[in-house]
Image (cartoon, rainbow, N blue to C red; front, top):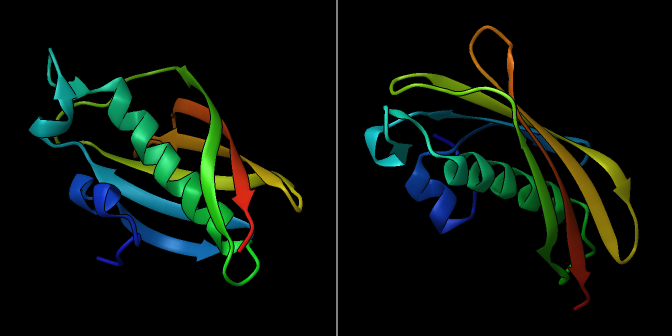
Length: 127
């Protein structure tokens, strides 16, 4: 499994499928320790998954030595994922500038149904 470069995302089991400056794709298997009541993926797990992908995408667009951190995140929950399901996240840029970048992450199930939509702003921290 390709590592994310982020210890928490690795702990969650995020598996990177593709990464470049314009798109990051990854998958996550819904495990019991990521669930809430009813054996469904916890909302915080959806958010952490999306945040990891947006942060990685933002980092791929930085100048050497610069860093990034999440400044703002907005999540819409549209469906649920059950224990054992595999969800896929795809992050694409809405804006990439010198001081910040804005990313949209779509999290879908195996059938392509949209479960969660996250838009986040990554702040650039100069070297």
